[in-house]
Length: 622
Image 1: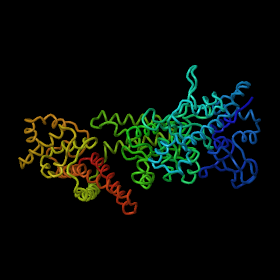
Image 2 (image 1 turned 90 degrees about the horizontal axis):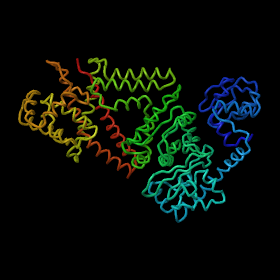
Image 3 (image 1 turned 135 degrees about the vertical axis):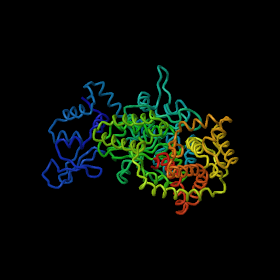
Image 4 (image 1 turned 180 degrees about the horizontal axis):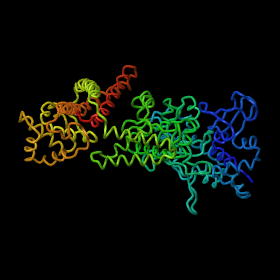
């Protein structure tokens, strides 16, 4: 029976050495490794270390050293094949049959590393030649340095169906097909898989090229073309840049996970070398388990667009059945429409580092996603939120962890929809927040370039809540004439209603809700106004039906919240303009003052959003 080196490597990678040794020896976690008293000689102070990532044990006392197979033969006393069979059964691997033809095929596969190395050398040569000019220009425009190009081994595949096939003919066509470098369809001649693409080599943990990712230059689909699964490459188990990220992670104690190759390369060039990416696939269970062998809470950083956020949520959901004590996922959210490369080029490495310093935990990500999944404006929708959270908890296999998540989600749900309110303790905090935000509004509304505010997207939902509040409290319209006249609502019906409210408030000094509705009944805005009173998507204090008579404290709170909500959405353009200007200054002249101002404005923007969320969750004053 012949066991190929590749098969044995796969067996070792599927065996967690600390778990195997821990069945007969008491082991303890020690940083990124495990330690124990050596079973091969008597000692009182542990000098026996186990490294799961590298797959070996070593004793600094007696020099004992080996891998999982060596452990089974030396410590368990098994023969080599018996040790292999026991480990293979546990790893759910089939031991190759004693077939001479199978042995020949295994020997042939052992040469695929040579094939991939030859292909990498050829792609690099093309990149540095005349044909690679467009690829070099693309990387230059992306800000990729010569040093990074060398370190990551960028290459180029000419737009030809047979140049690589001819150049590597000595390797044999069958091996080129098996390595995924040529495509063979039916009885037609094989042809080059990668054509007219920037080539990015994918390496195994030992630094050997096992596959490629090819990015098209110019128009065409797909944007990225990856090697197929081969005897060397399983994209569901492989992590791009693991060979470089692994030693870097030992220094930083973290791992960053991004969506694509170029994100990983850009971050590594910016100094974040502990970064990996799934090679052209969503993050799989195997990849999560692999990362957990390096760190207990990797940080996932996907693009700020909808696709990126959905990918982050898929990873979160996929991790739930795998959760184990002390092992989880963290997340960071990028600005909308930006990937890590965009952020670093626009605002510098410091901006990305600030995000990493305050990651979002797994439970927060799941809650935020489900909370925002639909408007929570009815008992049915609120019950739907509760069910979705419960379904996620049921996916967690570890019952202790599941119980903690269940309790956490129940507390969040209770606090959101059935809060215990103590007016004597909450009002001072509310007043302090209100005073702080009013100070920010004054400084931002003073920006001279703010002429009008186009309200769309999520802000349009807020505007609907504000309109409902103005209908319930018409006396407040005149107090906010200046801000309201700045608003330009993307929804024409809502804009017509706003204009009518301002118009009627200017005509009449005193106006109550019923009087206003009577006037609106004669216009095309009446049905929209009634709809806003019946059910609004946001649960602000100022668009709730009040008791008659209403306590003065309740009315004052509603008026204050209404004024603050108006100021939030009208202050946004001034904030955006100030942030854009600060970002420009950081790019032109990176100094501490410019960067501090930029971060202050970013924080103010985040606080505005958080304050709106708080306003939707404030209970009535009693």
